[in-house]
Amino acid sequence: MKQYKFILSGGGTGGHIYPAIAIANELKSRFPNAEFLFVGAKDKMEMQKVPQAGYKIIGLWIAGLQRRLTFDNTLFPVKLISSLLKSRTIIDQFKPDVVIGTGGFASGPLLQIAAIAGIPTVIQEQNSYPGITNKLLSKKAKKICVAYENLERFFPKGKMILTGNPVRQDLIDIDSKREIALQHFDLDPKKKTLLVLGGSLGARRVNELIAKEILLFAAHNVQVIWQCGTLYFDDYKRLEENENIQIHSFIDKMDLAYAAADIVVSRAGASSVSELCIVGKPVIFIPSPNVAEDHQTKNAQAIVDKNGAILMKEVELDSQFGIVFESLITDEAKQKMLGENIKKLAMPEATKRIVDEIVKLIDRK
View 1 (cartoon, rainbow, N blue to C red):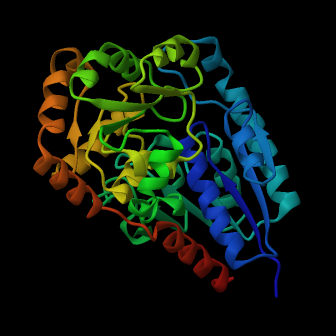
View 2: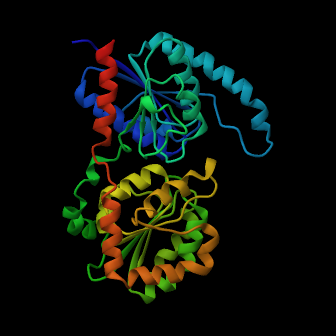
View 3: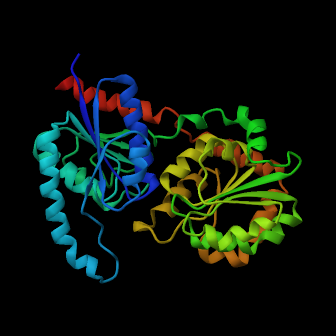
């Protein structure tokens, strides 16, 4: 049996890294003898997270263009040329059968060089509004695996396959983990539990909101599991003096956090949205306004359009959050409706579908 070689590239945030790892794990389960190499951006979180998952990674000297004029922007052409040259060396030495990109700036130079070298490339686009890197790469990609419908205006229709986003398989059937989850987080089963997620790096505005609304949660007998992010943990850990508030810099057992939750407040990164569809709990999305093309708002809106979640913009939080939260926490029928509707949008077989498409490319070679 041939020993296949795969390069996966994507990073900058967990939303690009974890799908790449999920795809690699599925490929490894099908091809135990395969070789894997990840390519990321130096000094970004993939340089830690990928080795923790058991894979080798090489870092490129690359970063995106900033919206404002900065010194880093003047270095962009140099970084791009450096990354293209290093990508060529990586491709020449590793000789992959397929190269898979999950977004982020590091995947741009690598997939471009792979395509020029005649190696099949696959793009996995998590968002309902694609980033600039994947839009540029789509012209030469063999397959484009997407998580949302109606992306024909961004990508060639004949290359697109609706697969969904890769998610952790331990999120399937979390209802059976409810009792274990309550014990794990030492929660009171008689109280409702709110889970707050600000994304892999944390979210300043969401954290400020939760700190401000502690009395609101107490008034409704709600206990809170709050992932505030490593950047903000020291700012908020003192609030754990309140017995109904648990503050975590990062939650390792996300399956148990979701299982314990009755309501979720979350950013609307693509991976989070896909996970929450599988989890099937009522969600208030607070999209980050600081991401390219405002894609978090578009991700959340795609769910809201199907009556599967509530969307609140950051500018509305001070005046409207209390009203929205109270109307949801006191309305069991609305909670049930939102949970059922968001679950209808889940694609739990996404990782398998993406790997099926990769295998088809291998079979053609």
